[in-house]
Image (tube, rainbow, N blue to C red):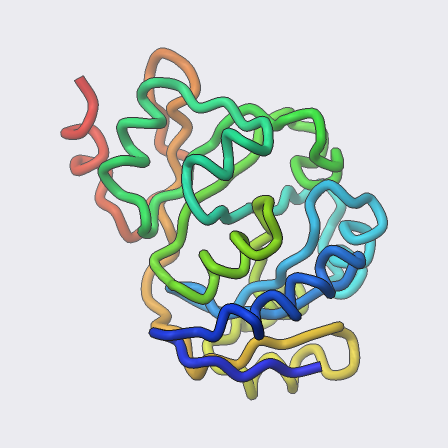
Length: 208
């Protein structure tokens, strides 16, 4: 099923229809501020198994999440350190991913048994409103087979995953660009996990 929306002014009722697929255990492709991603319910073992199958992703590779905001993360059970909250206030919505403790409701496949999860609030209205329509954070792995080029266009998603998805939200091309910077600020000392769009020195300047 395909849903067409405007990137800057997405229709909420359309996104609620896509969210209903996710609540039923489906997998839906959607645009983010970098690439097209795959949304699934991270609390559903069946949905996560389907997501790994579609991508052909190794089960020891964790899946990142996105949320509509800090409030949604905390409502779901996520706990953010003072440093994480400071960084979120400075860079969200945007290309900074934070590593926080995984909350109990998450299916263990999301974090591959590591006990932590990578999450961010993207600078794309469709992605944020989709998470909001679901009522909980959603997965955000790229909409492609593992090892294949990550798609920026809905047509590329159709080609890569034809017949394997329950839904595709077509909002035109995604902006592309550098991947998000991943930072673990859950402990006393922030740690750079992956360099990306936000320079490390800018991250450090936001922390005491």
